[in-house]
Length: 126
Image 1 (cartoon, rainbow, N blue to C red):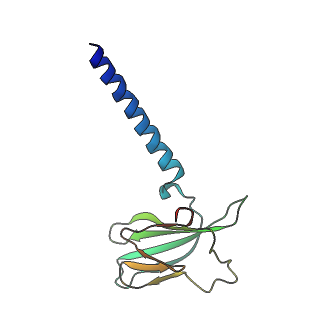
Image 2: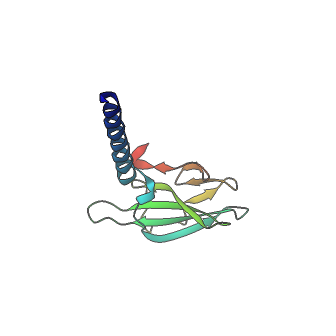
Image 3: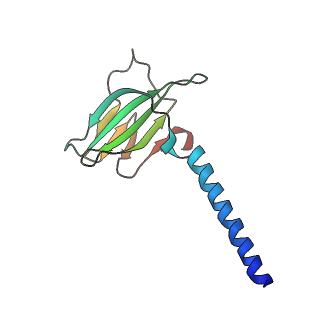
């Protein structure tokens, strides 16, 4: 009887720790909750499979950042793949969209080479 109670208590404790840990990760470290920002430009891959949309994220207490999301054109699925605060270039100086495609699934954004199917770049988590 004591063993069942102890196992149950340990299970509840471990489950609680897991839930709290996942909550902290998604709130503090995941790229899924980035601010939307103001649209800057879009660049479509050579075969039209993906589009990378770039946004300027303005913050009241810090410098502006830039966020990039990839859109799978066939399904419309979007996910954040790029977030940078240090290399953002203000509008009057910016020559164009900072996305250059190497292939249909590999893009270079502000000098960072990303496979848009699996890679992510977050300047705060290098």
